[in-house]
Amino acid sequence: MTDSAPTDIARIENLPLRMQVADTLRRAIINGKMKPGTPIVELNLANQLNISRAPVREAIQILENEGLIETVAYKGKRVKPLTPREVEELYSLREQFEAFAVRRIIEFNKDVSPLEPFCQAMTEAAAHDDFEALMVADQGFHRTLISLSDHAILLSVWDNLFLRIHQIMALRNKANRDLNDVARNHLPIVAALRKKDIILAISLISDHTRSAADITNNAELFAKDE
Image 1 (tube, rainbow, N blue to C red):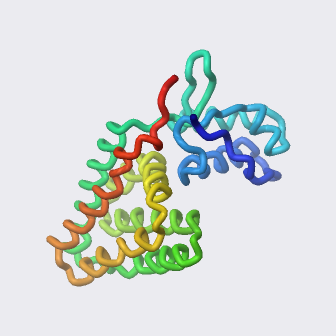
Image 2: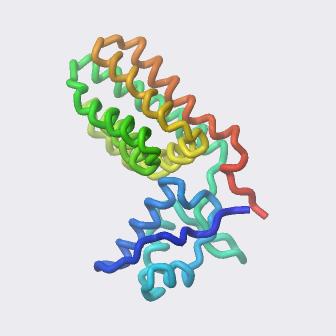
């Protein structure tokens, strides 16, 4: 059985409403609040947000175009389910992206200090059991890692895959729930980069990525078609 749409979505007051609604729903999906398979009921969302149905309908269409929502014949719309194969494909690709970024960072002697604030933010978020803050910092860490490679095409491809990759990250972290463990896992990566130990850094980032893909073993995270 899938979760219903969240009831704590903040009331939206600023225009354009369709973009505000789309952003709110997108964050709820990416951060795992609305799990794969969650029904998307236009009327319910409009009532929760205290707005008309038109901007909600437009927002849903935006997210459908982004691949986060899908229409199921005779059933309506829902958060698009993940499949174990999709997770494996995205994360095997992510592993190659981040290992490539690590190699370039070390080879071109890039300053890795921009990664440190994200590590600190994750540590603080874990200490306060603040899952959403931890996810923001976690996502920022990995995008910054890619950015430090100074490879525009790589960053562009990463951003195109951002929504699904970070959705999987959030679901995995929710399943783990040891936020301190999530925060600690990033520190050795930064240390290896500072030491310019390319073999260790690539090994750590590969292990980190593979462990994040282990949600394929958690059947509860994958919606089943009825």
